[in-house]
Amino acid sequence: MAFGITHHLESEEHQHLRHTVSKFVEKEVAPIAARMDEEDYFPEEVFKEMGQMGLTGMLIPEEYGGIGEDLLSAVIILEEISKESPALALSLLAHSILGAYPIVKYGAPQQKEKYLPALAEAKYIGALAYTEPGAGSDAAAISMSARREGDHYILNGQKTFITNGSVADVIITYAKTRPEMGRDGISAFIVERTFPGFSVSKKLNKMGMRGSPTALLFYDDVKVPSENLLGEENRGFYMVAKGFEVERITISAISIGIAERALRWMVNYSKERHAFGKPIRDFQLIQEKVARIGAKLETVKTYLYTLARYYDPRRDNRKESATVKYMAAKLGVEAGLEAIQVLGGNGYIREYPVERLMRDAKLMDIGAGTTEIMTIQIAKMIYREF
Ligand SMILES: Cc1cc2nc3c(=O)[nH]c(=O)nc-3n(C[C@H](O)[C@H](O)[C@H](O)COP(=O)(O)OP(=O)(O)OC[C@H]3O[C@@H](n4cnc5c(N)ncnc54)[C@H](O)[C@@H]3O)c2cc1C
Image (tube, rainbow, N blue to C red):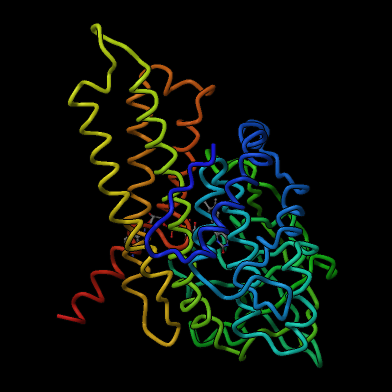
């Protein structure tokens, strides 16, 4: 099902990448996507294969074994995978964009050498642990502590909803080094799952994105060598905030992949299905759904591609990244729901993938900052600008 629709902002290399990923998805991901959902099964072997192909090296510089720091390539990879398995795309995003990219941006040379090549080839799986049971949207309110003791930090606390948490080897973990300083007292650490005191307490059972493992993590006096402090001490909050720009742009590609797949189902099904003596595509109320999702897809996708292609980390991209995430998340859910509607009873039945697309799409209203938090961010920036 190689329906990778190319876009005018893609270079020839991007088109080649899309074609390669699309073929891989057709061969390796399509056959297991439904099982991943049914059994909440994470296909570690497919992840390793993505490592062989270089896909897990997205946003990692070539000198460390990656395919380079190109956001549009990451968007294309995530979009193509999401057409079959948004869950696999989410795990890839958590691995590359959340787990590896902070090391690319803030890592010391020896940290880059130690971790990036292994992450690029998926020898290690990556994750990022920020959210806690008591602190999600209110990011400065985390309570995990990191106490300096000689040449180590001692981490104590819990993290929840961590994508890849139960399978990750390397977990970028945020903790308070100066609890009295609020957002100015948060630091980032590279934690390995083999560090004593680290444990996965529970894999969480989700409504969607099943097959992408989400876990509750425990840190009980975890001894982290001081050379595993990532970036400057007490600058963690600002690292995460900047990281959100890239995360929100790239996660939007998952919503776009979902919307494209949903639209494809709407079109194909409405050509085949007959009611009142004609194909349902002849009904204008069906055409309205196709046109509305198609028009929004065209617009949001072009905005996403523009941001990805011209992303400049030196600029303040908070408004743009929140805007694309807000629009894409809404589109993904709307497309999933409308695809169910066009398929009628079949849309509600699990044999057809559209209900899964809708369940998967809903995560994008929550992860990487909720739609409400995007709204607040956009409004804040508009008031500042005008
Ligand atoms: C499947 C999944 C994967 C995830 N992966 C990761 C991961 O890899 N790493 C990680 O660190 N986290 C991860 N998260 C956590 C995710 O980022 C948080 O769930 C999200 O930020 C929301 O936080 P919360 O769940 O605590 O909701 P809350 O912050 O408790 O929000 C509850 C509701 O209140 C609203 N709300 C909160 N504050 C305001 C406000 N000021 N104004 C208006 N409304 C408000 C929210 O929008 C929401 O509707 C994941 C979550 C899920 C479900």
